[in-house]
Length: 149
Length: 149
DNA sequence: CAGCATCCGGGTGGATACTG
DNA sequence: CAGTATCCACCCGGATGCTG
Figure (tube, rainbow over the protein chains, first blue to last red):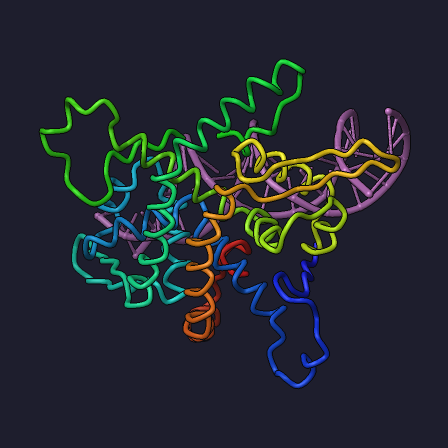
């Protein structure tokens, strides 16, 4: 699909030739971060870890509804991104603790802000949806499920 | 999959019986908003609209790499959520303008904060990824693509 | 306990062709 | 120009079974 949105805010000016990092790259990377934050489990896991280190099944219970597959995968992704640390205690039975890094904790700040926004504006969103559905649905059209939930 | 994470920060205490809205519901709705914000196109489109009203193909060019299908779908979803307005001018050729509502503009604030965070911390993330890949990849394992990009 | 490997269904989203 | 309709490939993510 090759996203190539050269810029979003400012028009391309002629002084963009000598800077080693075109903001195109930044824009792409920001989108990546947004995508990670927006994925189904990341925020839930990071939030759960906000209360301190947790073990694998402990997290599984806290998040609720996640499969081990996705928990493992998401944790590994977060570890790769430097958001969480994974500490193995080779005992029997084995013990693994996951903990937020400073980077992971710092992420909680803007994410929390977004959460606050959501909490404050969900009534408006719900109202808009209800009205939209009342006007448009009878005419016989519907959105794909992933945009409705 | 039925996410039922009763709480994320505080343990379930016995005083959660008389409030009409369990925070379970709120938590689910917040996740929905996060999912919307994190989806592939929403933020890009909302950001593009931040500079003022835009027409359909204008948006398509600004976002860059989006298919009309997804542009239409995402715009309709944003309209349903009360984030953008859609104004049709029945001329030949037809003209349709999309514009952010107050709600949509207010979303740009926390999203901008997240963007700032991303911009500030991407170097750290990249460094963590590079190191992680250097240590773990040789051993012969790899993450699914959607967690790597 | 803490995973990994495999299978597999459903949904997401791109490409293409057609309409008002 | 601004969409709609259809087809289809890919991959996310759940369920299950097996290891150390």
